[in-house]
Picture 1 (cartoon, rainbow over the protein chains, first blue to last red):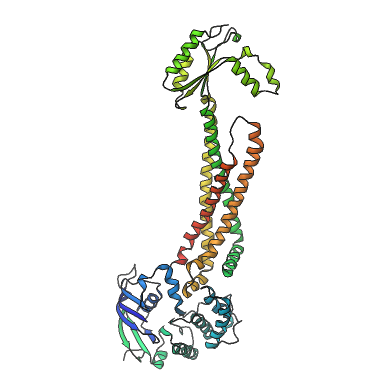
Picture 2: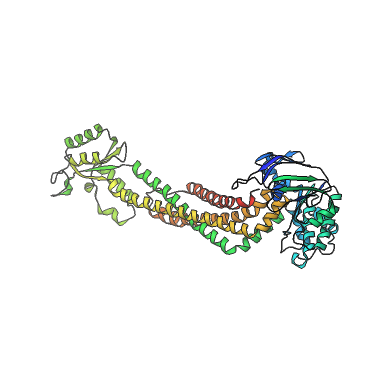
Length: 228
Length: 303
């Protein structure tokens, strides 16, 4: 599904690479935790998959496609196959829950009939049935993150990228979010989640990729947060 | 599509005062731009007409001029045939001269009658008071001074009239108008372009959250760009339309209804030339709204 082939990424302003010689293969349907301290290269890793960045050396392949070679006009098509969730939810404040989720389908030109069907379905999946007319500020943090996940998932993407999705949530709420991500993963969606939350990683026992100063220092199946 | 139109509309409403400012700036600058073009055309027309016609006239002596006839005339005497022949020969052998016409008193009188028919001036002159003249067409209308000097020195020439002394100040004035209009319109057009760029930049900035999400979920660049493009196009098209309307009205009121009727001897700019200018103004207006928008939104479309 996703292949990093000897990937090095330099930022223009810096001498030290944000990622250096990273080799990793993530298969379809995997659940992967990306751990490491701030500045270890987690965000760079995710942004390379989204094709917000291109590699300095090496290749990133998603679904067999070399991202450096896709035409800039085709990048939106690429992003439609990837759902993204952030720590800060990134919902539109003036729009209701329904509208926020529908927005993701509207802007890629999906027909209204499909939107009418998919939005309630997805809200049910994330456990927000009956809250479609609420505004984001009327919801708790956990609920807001569920809306963001619904928006990322409504288009049935092959990959879900979550950058610290529980970073702003209390432990109990985080567990709920993780259950939801796990459920989404079980439908066949590849999930890549960057996190600092050791409890979650240790509980879930999924594959762990650890980055340190741009180097991939650990790739462990059923791993834990801290190196043993 | 519905989303695009709704976004365009809300964008226009949100920036109503800026949009109006843009439209007015576009209107004024494009009108000036059009006026500059019209003036250029008109000056060329007038120049062509005058420069095509006789550039230098040498009026010969007549008895009627009396005691002090002026020029190289002898008092109370017509130019002699020998003098006439000498002038003709001198002109024909001058390389600067393209063509020489000889206009008799009778021709001149007839022309005079034609020009002033139905006016009281008609009866103030008789044929005997008219002068014979040589009308000289030059190879290059700008090289007139040598021929004028030569003619002034020839015996039997009462006066040499060269239209340059009359027309040059006029053309200088018209040129000044033309360049002033062009310069001012250039400045205003730059201002209008910057204003549109800024308006769209502000609109994009105020919607950066939405734009970020749109890019994240894979909305196409066209989809993201279209509301902004339409918003500036509305301003551009309205500005161009007002400018074209103003220019057309000006052409109708000042040229068709006024100048053409009072100054019939000149050729005035016609509607087909005006049409080309109106189209040019509209084209510049649209370009001026689209290009700054593309530049201003580039940052938000970069993937």
